[in-house]
Image (cartoon, helix red, strand yellow):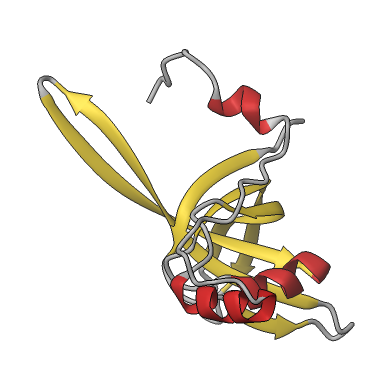
Length: 148
C-alpha cells in the first residue's frame, strides 16, 4: 500500500522536543497549509493545520533549526494514533511522520545573525539554497488539475 505525503507550509509554533525512554529524540510541531481555489468568479482560501512528528537524527536537527513561521517542505507518511479515554470513549488522531524535511523559505530571521557571524559573512537576508529531493520535481511540476 502507498502511504506518502508531501506538504509545504509554515510552522505555527516553535517545535517541542522530548525524549523516548530509549533516549531517542522526538520533535513535534504543527504547520499551516493554505489552499486557494476559485468558486465562480471569486477566489477563496482555506487553511489546514497538520501535526508533524520526527524521530532520531532528523528530530535533533529540526529541533535546532526550526522556529515559528519557518516555511518547510515535508515528505512523510500518515499515522493514525488510537486510544480510549478514561470514560471509555474511543479517540483517534491522524498525524504526519516526517522522513525528510527541507527548509524552503530561507533562514529564519532569528538565525540569520547567528549564521552570518559563524561564517563571517554579512547578514544579507539571502535565502538558503533549495535542497529538494529529485522525486519531488515530478510532484511539483505538473499541469494536471487537482480534483479538490
